[in-house]
Length: 179
Image (cartoon, rainbow, N blue to C red; front, side, top):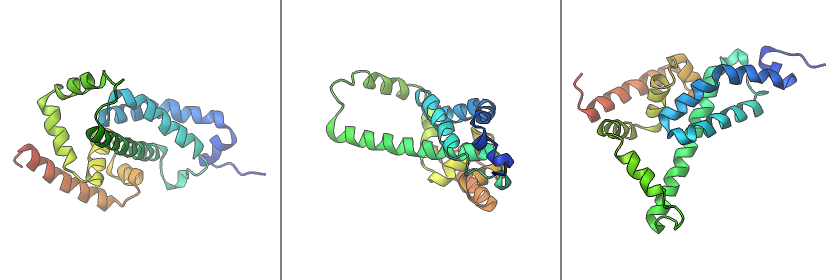
């Protein structure tokens, strides 16, 4: 006989996972969309919940809430997506665009002309370490608390605070903002 705890309810009754999806999908999709192109946000949000569904038996409600756990999965997928995109751009730089990719140049041109502010902010964010960038964006885009960010990234609260402090200093310097 299996004992059912709050963390394993959807393991015994997979239909119950739908409530998790309904409660958090839009928030996760918006977070991903803010960090990446909106074209991929839908796919990565879906993948976030697919991974969460597959790993739902490992989720321990006693360790924390499901929201930071989902943000942690999404953040890992964003990193994986960016690394794949970077590899693709490096390959394109070496070989040139494939002959059938005639729309790519226009999409790149559209993104480049999106605005100077976005470019400056993106450049400033790119100057942060991965850990600092994840903390800033989980707080700014995800609206997570320090505790939730610590849980999502699997780090201590003090690490979140120090990463955020360093990131603020770097962003102020990069954007020319006086403190």
